[in-house]
Amino acid sequence: MTYEWKFKARPYSDDEAKRLLKDVVSPETTDWHYNKHHKGYVTALNTIEKGLDTADPAKANGNYSEFGELKRRMTWNHAGALLHDIYWEVLGGDGDPGKGPEVLAAIEKEFGSFENWKEDFKATAFSAKLSGWGVLAFDRLYSGRLLNVLVDEHHYGAMWGAIPLIPCDVFEHAYYHKDGAGRATYIENFINNLNWERINGRFKKFVK
Image (cartoon, rainbow, N blue to C red; front, top):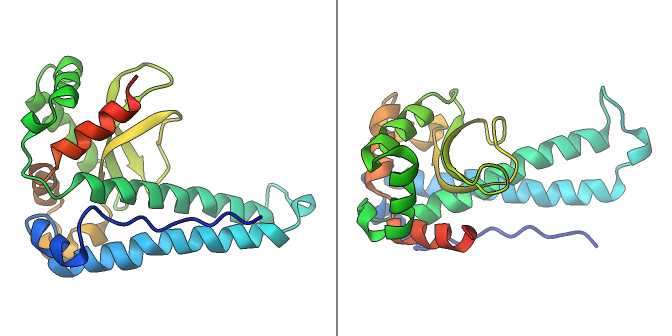
């Protein structure tokens, strides 16, 4: 049976997004980014699932095969859909980390202070290629640490077993309509718009 991937709803309506996220992205971008780019990854996952039903694995090889390309694009679209799910989830707040006491304490323990984490996170996100992400992740399966991870595209640099807690999308389509080439401005506004209550809930869900 072919698995059906679901397009996840945001914790606010499309109209609310235009109001809540206005300091981070343009109102038009809240629509395009979610209903075109994000939804497109989920649509592609379902297309890939159907394609794998008929692709012949016996023809797979290291150069080109339908089976291999479908598998390769599944990774891209899966990571894109997942990171966007969390991206929207963590936005829409007032940026007060005190509203996430458990995750704030963990950040301060790992980085020495919230400001140290913020400086490292901004530099990480800013360092991604033209298309990429800066991600605060919990390295659950290996070190048990909180790490700021640089991810190019959606998946190059991602860590096995790490749980994304705060993913900052720095693909140009995320910020150019409002800030142009001002990636640093966008990242600062992203941090200032985080919903630390939802981040804290995500942290407590996955940290054992």
